[in-house]
Image (tube, rainbow, N blue to C red; front, top):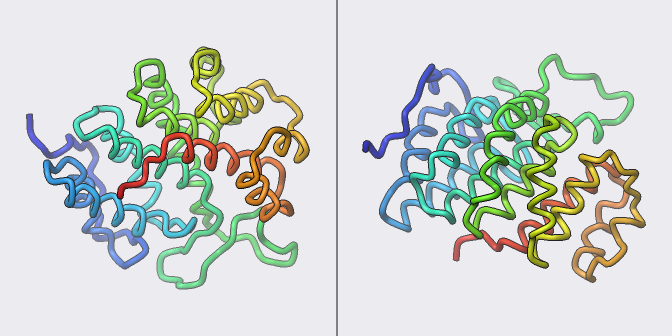
Length: 247
């Protein structure tokens, strides 16, 4: 089997931009996640994060890259830790809170962060990113029942990032996982189930049973909309449960 992931409808990466300019290097970064060399894989992950979702900011190339990232996760042709990283990357892309339009260096904040007098941009890359992630999320969440331990937290974080847009058939998968999840994944899985059931989640609910670290984080984002707080809490819990970050 070729190391190069199969691609259909390959975009013209030179005509779109990421955090550092034209995105012509993105295919090479994707391919490097398949390398047999751990240093090369680690570098590829770090460069993908920096190029596509830099500190919560997304770019024109980001939604385009989503389906290629999802394909790497789904095919399982790279290591479990790399797949975990890529799954958290998709969750973070869906949770982006700012973007930069091509040809304009000015950062545009997400609609929930914009002041009422700020004009709405003619193009919203956050919406494009969420649409792209929603399109691939059901297939990836379907991996959850047989996913290796390293990936489970990332898949829960992904589910939490787009839970309100997921089809109904995803709920039994999350429910079954929550019923079997160990203590490290249980809290984040139960929060995803609360979203899927359309439960009324309050700030107080989030803080009940939270440890000091999570409470401190929630205090720091207390002025954010509750839906965003829940999304971020799920990601924080899932990251802590999976500890996917490379040494």
